[in-house]
Image (tube, rainbow, N blue to C red; front, side):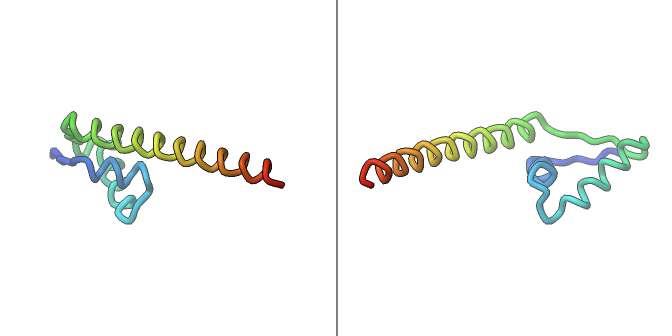
Length: 76
């Protein structure tokens, strides 16, 4: 049996979201060879892009906070 998944499947597992347990059960079926997982390439590229974007946003936020803290320390 083939099980077709897409981006949300990968995101559920990555971020341990609401349906993560169901996704893990699907993976268990695949591990015991009762099913075969079919994932389109874009379903891996999209989560990668989302993770990269989040990391970039967090770096920018951290830099902004660091600058604010430096400025506060200078004012003391």
